[in-house]
Image (cartoon, rainbow, N blue to C red; front, side):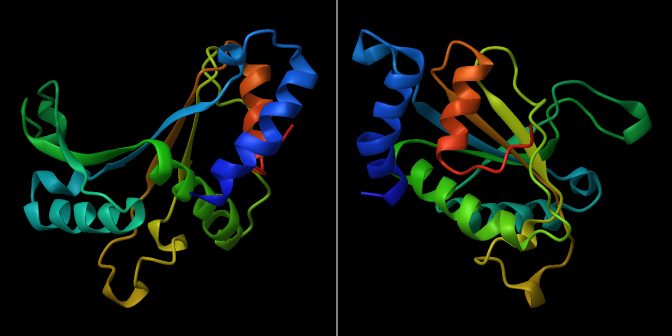
Length: 179
C-alpha cells in the first residue's frame, strides 16, 4: 500500500471529519482519479513524436496511455477530425496514490523557480487541474533521450462537494497550493 494511501486512511480522514463535521463516513472527500494528458501538436506532421510522447507518459504514469484524437477539423492547424493529436492516462487506486506521492515529493520540487500551484484552478465541484511545463522534472524520464520538451496536464478528481473541502484535502497531502 502506498504511503499516501495510509496517510489518507489514518490521518487525513480524521482531520477532515474534525474540520467539516461529517456524520456519514461516505461523505468524507477522497481522491477518485488522476488524469494525465499530453497534447502533441507536432503529431499532425510527424507520427513519431506522438509515439515518443506516449512512451514518456507511460514511464511517468506506470501504465499504458491511450491515444486521443481531434474532435473537430481545424484548417488553420491542418488538423482533421479523428486525427491522433495527443495521449492521456487515468490513474486510480494504488497507482494514483503512488503518482501523487512522486509528484509532491520529487517532481514539483525539481521545477525551476517553483513557488506553488495557483489555487484558482478548482472547477467548483472539488476537482483541481494544473499544468507542468516540462516532462523532464520526473525522474523516470532520461534527459539525454528526450527529443522535445513537452507539457503535461494533471487533473485531480475528488468526491468533495466544494472547492474548500477539496483544497483542504489536497493541502493535507502537502500539495503546494498557493493561497
